[in-house]
Length: 409
Image 1 (spheres, helix red, strand yellow):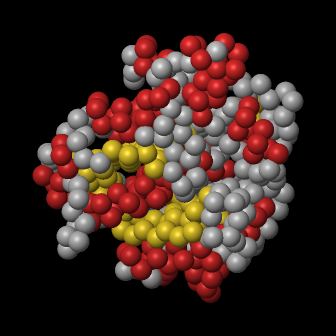
Image 2 (spheres, one colour):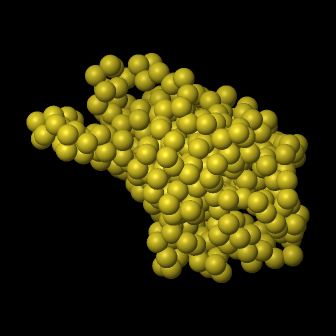
């Protein structure tokens, strides 16, 4: 490991239900302006779920050629657009030491589902040959590596809803150990299709109904929460060593100071009720950053709005913070954005960094009847407060747990 190497986030980009760039997404999140609406692009007339976080007004031709817009899965198109924003003005000093990681929970599901339908309905000759190239979870990473001449590691990474947080943590380790000068991390997912919505609805994971009040569907930590709201989109963060950023004269939004990761080894979908894996991830991130809980100014919770996840996270936070928990503001921005699945951790890291920049904690909207009154959840409206250190959590199906410590310089 290279002693004293710090990993800085120097740029972000976003395509979300709340906006087609990072600035508009941040404005919506801090204002508590929901991106959840009734579905327009997906027929859910026979499903229990009625609302979600669709990306609206997105024109792929602003980012790729017409032929590529047809070949690539929607999640990859969002990834490319978010990456383009984060990469504005960036040129690596050494392309051989510049890597790209695209984190995704499910990858090219629309592309592969459409190919399966074409096979069944029209025969094997009607399957687009590009499926073999663009149907994998690494497709967007490979595309971006070619576009930006990134000659270091380019990979697709999946850990369900913890994917992007794991990718950011691994970028920290990569830079800290001297394997790269810069890593572009992009979280991207689009599972807003009938198959994925039906399966998650059948599992009881999605909030049913709310067609008459879509913005009220995502209710983290509220007693009347009934499931998460699925969203689509992508968020990119450019992570550089402090030296590399200084050599090119770049300013930084903040530092990735600590990373913790674990597995529950418990259940395919349900978290461990005792929160052991989440506790380990949070404590590992603190140890990695050499910080105590007293240094933390805010927690950006995973906070999905599912009964089991919110209860587990509340229990884990009590264990980690002890008697000081009530003094730490907590937010769940999924109340506004919905759950971007494998991209969620990237979005929440970006939002945390922008909150540190502006000294504001975004609100948890729809928190009308808090189930966990010992948690200081910032409800309804943003809170102006100096924020220097943030703990952000991501937990996922399969028992994946990951936590990051972000801090100002």
